[in-house]
Picture: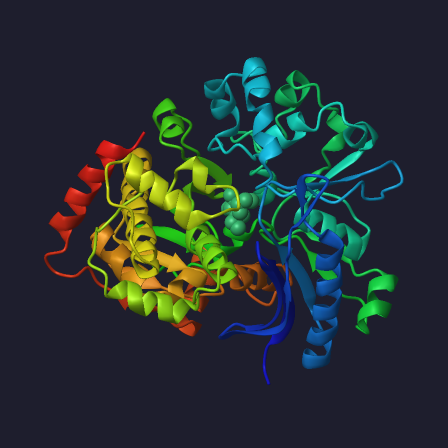
Length: 492
Ligand code: LFR
């Protein structure tokens, strides 16, 4: 067998995976060696991540990857953004990281805005306002014994990387989700940090994707049975940044939808767009690899469906996805539409009831069945994708000829077709594992197994990964124009 094996650890909101990626100049294949649940835990009224369970899952996965491959050429970790663990002066974790869906964070939004108004924040950080951005989380934790004792703040992949290597740092793509990074200089926004009364020492040195973090410690080698040395590389540690690396684009006139629990919809740019219009449209300027900017908007995503499935399953209704999608395909399009970005959909809870309520408030008959609710979610997501792709193109001046839809949503044929119809351009769906592939590609390049820029990495994806094309259904355009006008009227 040719190729070098890297372990790509990809942590999502409901599960973590360790993938063994075999990479060579003409070869890129992945297989999952270990999957483990990521179950948030509510305790003392706060929703937490069980980060020790994640570390345990990673160790188990590395052991499995080693058994599988014989030798590992490296490890890289990516996960969701914004959330942090805090270390005390001894380098010990202070409590479990709080989940970004915990309601407490948004309580601090007015206090932050009183110090730095939203337009000024945007000009500095270029970040879409989301109530859970790290900047608000830190403000909500102000005055707590935990924050007082904290000496180092680590984003989730940096915390897990610290436990694997003993080295601290803040990887840039993920640091760009905090609301405390300067979008222009790409350094911590020290003035902002000072204005908010945060100690500068909390923020570790930045490191770029592709930089070496260190090597697996003797303890980790013993726990996993791996033969050292095994380098650990800072990949694009924000999962969305890794997923964007994993987009099999062959032109720069593309938009992407990284479609999982969230749908991150946007374009890739060289420079941030920090205009007031862009702020009002809710676009973020997060960082990508090789100096790129991920100019995107967070659409609520498959969370709407996942939470609905959870609600139905808990009341004994069938919630098997293929069955639900087959039934939804029989429901006429545009029966009911909601604004997928309605902030009421953010916290965990009874999603079908919330959707019904929003429909009623906007003068629509709420979906009358489970399949009708699924259909409402998919139509509403496709409409949100259309609005966002078009707005991203308009605000950035980037032409869009094709939409790449990557991540778990690429398996959802109905959603892919609706997206092609709504956007009026072909949708290229896949790979499902874009984030893990992007993670592996950055490691392989850092190790010298691959060379070149993003275009070269992506041409390997084009040559090796399966992609399915969905073309807009002829004549479907006017229906979507009308749907957009109808929803526009009901948007707040
Ligand atoms: C997707 C993601 C999004 C981020 C959200 C919360 O997994 O990383 O990009 O906005 O999770 O961190």
